[in-house]
Amino acid sequence: MTLFIRRPPERSFDRDGKPIVCVPLANSDAVARIFPKDYERLLAEGRSGNWTLNCGHVKAPDWRTGPKRVARLVAGPKGDVRVRHRDRDPLNLRSDNLEAVPFVRRKATPRAIM
Image 1 (tube, one colour):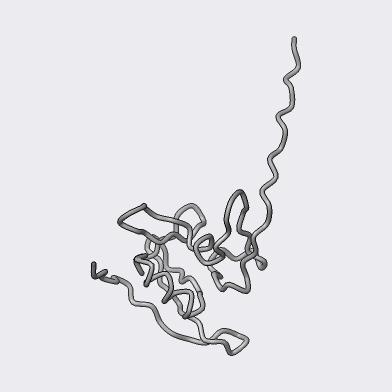
Image 2 (cartoon, rainbow, N blue to C red):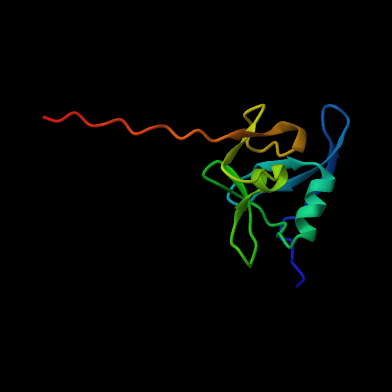
């Protein structure tokens, strides 16, 4: 299946001089930054290049499974873990900025009986 990219990405360099891809986002004037190898891998997996900014998360649609968070796709964690942005910028999707941290479930506290 051929995917049509409505907002073509731009290739650029970050502050460190590393090549990045700046992907324009729907629903916003912002752009997401990602390494070229990660962007090309997502396209090869069948993800669309038409990304959106939804509730503070960058999502990439897939016609088979629906939209998924790009940070989770790039970091590739398995199981019950969260993906954290080291610089707290949800638009910085470079793999060196993403970190998988274990998800800790809090115990429910018993309610006071009146």
